[in-house]
Length: 253
Image 1: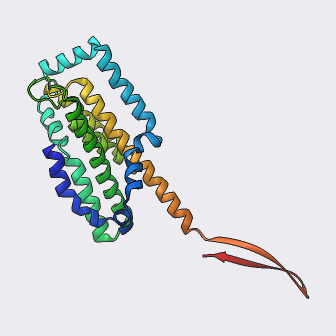
Image 2: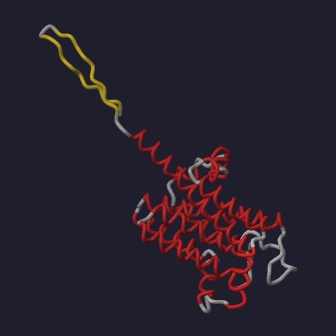
Image 3: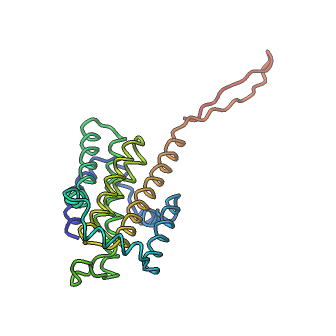
């Protein structure tokens, strides 16, 4: 929770780097549209797959996943990489992306960079906020400390996969591969450190991807609608004159 609040304090000022329309026209309808974006966009497919996988792990109590959890926490195969995963799950790449794109958009007057900064900000805020609500609704104890009841879902994994999904959608495939690899490291490190169960990690990854892609699809739809409005319409109007037939072109600017 504290990392979420700190992140908002750091990246909220970058809203001013975004186009005026992004903040000036934010209303209740847009709030509802973004809230339901994982369900009302093509992001529904990964959402259903991830939710189904999480449910299976929870209900079946599959010994395979129990074995994975036990082996990771006992043998700790990640070694020092687990610390990297822990740090990267504390919104570090998300904040770096928003800062980088926001500053570039503001300094170079680049609307595309401003848009990407705003998209990452929203994907991080929505996904992390959703995970925080679920944490304090389910109140699941952590595997390493049963007195701490905020295990489900994994917040580190949520923010990491929100970051990865936006990067993969907005940039070349190799950046996406790198981002998802980093997110996977974050998720596995949470089990490696015995901070979360596999179900927590699966749920966190699902929420992160669902909001990252859901908001991306909304953003693309908005871009297409804006582009279509800017297109010029032309009409051919036949005219009959004394000399014969003529054509007049009318342009709707």
